[in-house]
Length: 296
Image: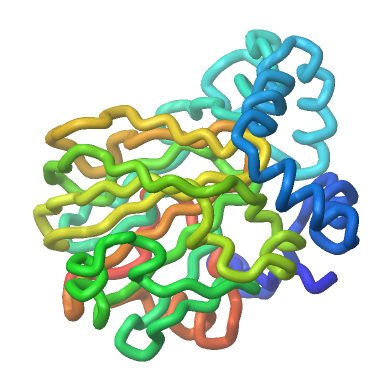
């Protein structure tokens, strides 16, 4: 199994993805029986709901210590006492202490909406986007030809959240939003094993689309993508809303998830290290509120 290679901006070094409990996913996505189960059973949303119920039960509390140990999660930055969590999912959607994720307040700086692994694609050069083993085009992703045409020569930023990441995400600038649009799909994992075995994955996943009318970056398309087993997306605001930079937009419940942002041509210039490492096929580790580019 080829795990993703990640560029760490702090250490300026390449790291290998740290996965967790991948054995079951290997069976599901690599064996004949597993693939049959995946595409006939796990595509059903009721299976996702059953698993969600399990992860929200008190019995799931026993999984938290091993999860923390495996990923080296810093419990000192967690807002609540560790003995206050009522389930694994309650821990998974944990809030952090104020100041744990400083937000870059420079208006012209583009910031990351989430703790994640980032890759950037120039849509003028690619009409189909490769993201760790699967492909999609804008028409498949957005399900609206007019929007796809509007952003067809812009930039696509893909933020992949791993299980260990802080799963709350925020707004990248001051602005207003329209109502959230829900695009039906099936729920699949965004674990590296699944991505290497499942073509056209993201175009099939359930996703939610928000048009952000931002002060510094114009109209930005923001999509949250759900994942297998839970994949539930919780929006802080489903309707029209005026937001501030760094304010929480929502969170993902248990399961790896992805955020995709689309910018019109010439609006942003990404940081050089991000573009360089994307060109080499590396995802770049970023934190919510961290600068990733500038207004062009």
